[in-house]
Amino acid sequence: MHKLVITILFLTASLGFSQENDTILSLEEYLGYVKKYHPIVKQAQLITTESEAKLLKSRGAFDPKLEVDYNRKKFKSTTYYDKLNTAFKIPTWYGVELKASYENNDGTYINPEYKTPEGGLYSAGVSVSLAKGLLTNDRMATLKQAKLYLQYAQAEQKLVTNDVLYNAIATYFNWLKNYKAKIVYQEYLTNAKVRLNSVKQNFYAGDKPAIDTLEANINYKSRMLDFEKAKIGYIKSALELSNYLWIENNIPLELETNVVPDITTINNIDVVLNSSILNTTETLIENHPKLKGLQIKKDILTVDKRLKTNNLLPKINLQYNFLSSDYENTNSFNTANYKTGLNISFPLFLRKERADLRLAKLKLQDLNFDISATKVNLKNKVNASLQEIASYKTQYDILQDIVVDYKQFVNSEERKFSLGEGSLFLVNYREVKFIESQLKAIDVEYQLLISKSNILRVLNNL
Image 1 (cartoon, rainbow, N blue to C red):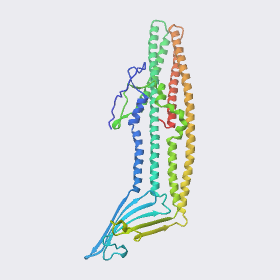
Image 2: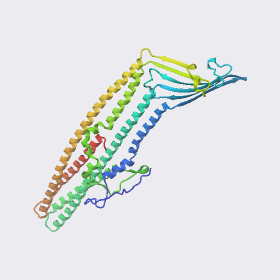
Image 3: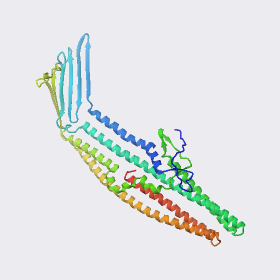
Image 4: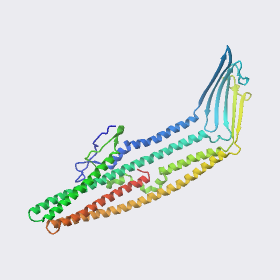
């Protein structure tokens, strides 16, 4: 597959120093592409398509059936037998089968019981399972389970899609974090270069000692090293993001260098992720696809248990057919002419049937434990995520204040240094602490965004 490098065109907005001339890829627009074109999201849709095909296959057990059986033997001008037997069968939901047939048998050596009138023999009747197979049987159970498997596939599709979206969102947040870190280092690399040039000028003017130029030069190279590390981290995260960007015909996209994340994502994250649904967490847990899937599995096992219970009954099959040689005269079908049969079988010890039933009950019991554990696990995960969000929100607010305070600290120290009252060491020291506080704020913002998306992942509502 040819990999196309395509510039994604989005609405742009001026967001300050670094985004004025860049194309902004917002989280909402990015998710639109993931939901519509990502191959795994499309692949998840095949889960339900496959189950629909299996459902259609199980319905085939109730299709009407036409049968034709013809045999003829002739040797040395003698027709030993000429037998034609046709039947039309209609299975019904319960253990009842409707049947209409036509027989026309003749020949020199044919068994007398198979002989029919010259124009053939017509029959119409019914086959009934009186015990085992009446209220439930293999074809009924298979169709019921196929319908349930379709619902299970729909729940499974939601889980797969939800995981893809969460990974895509986490990748976007990582891209945003690395972009902000790169901007921080880029800004302070510029400051370090300006400061180095200023110190050099002051040294040449005799206002600063030579040691200050050395310290300013070391600081500038350190900032350059930090910027290179941040830049490669950003490039790697951008390439990871490209894994989730596709367009029609399964063509992958690759981000251009001027495409950047939206640095104001934190302001509208709740709208994009529809976090208002967190007010109904109890309902969301009850309707969680994982719990629904387990409940559907329970229903499937319940159908299997009923079938195993039914297998404990004896097999009693009754057939009754009205016979007539004149199908055009419906009155000719009466109780005077008939063919009937009764078949009874019953295992004496029922060891296989009782074992199957016991295993079905054990599977149901095991699944009930699984449902209870899953429900508690989901509730605990939701509560932990809610507390995590609250904690990161508090940390984020505190760090925002710290960043503002450190910025004032650095500005004050720079003014003192420009007036000859401070030292370059103190300016660099204050600036390092300022950078650390900014990076901490960026990291906590990332953790806050991840926790907000994680709770929606747990609730399967992405």
